[in-house]
Length: 196
Image (cartoon, rainbow, N blue to C red; front, side, top):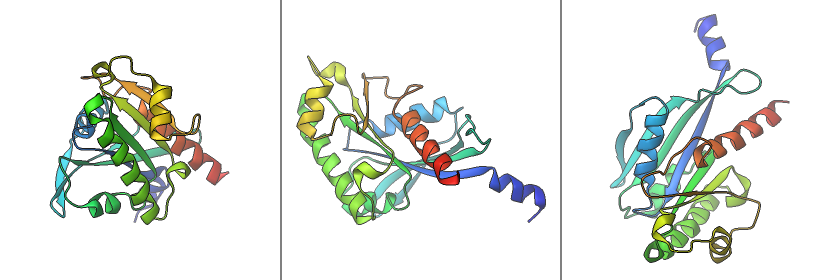
């Protein structure tokens, strides 16, 4: 390995982010929108135990305060997953999670179940839901008349002030300053603290 490639490796930090949620919550939509916002990076598809996994890799354009860059790897299961183990495997060595919940009234129960499953799968991976960078995004709130974030948080059992929350409408799942950006900022803050 050359001196230049060693210096390049030291200037990047590899980060793994998982987009979780139930079937139809917008995970694939978020991946495509984020890939476009990240400069049109390709979204690759693979399979794991019969489940489809989408992934993308990019360098986050905003350097950390110390000048290092985040090499971001984003993963999401798409479609219906027949096995819980696929999400559990995806969560191994994860640095942060975005959990999408479809706010349409007919889908809320499935979002709640996905959040419980996420918590269980993180525990199996040796992590706790409240211990890693996390953002919950209520998606398609335009399909829920009178949607109220506080009431939804209470119904889901999310503690006020401990988890970043975002709201999006149909057709606008990813945006600058949104859930992915929030989780990356949380990860960056932890990286800087751990190297001080």
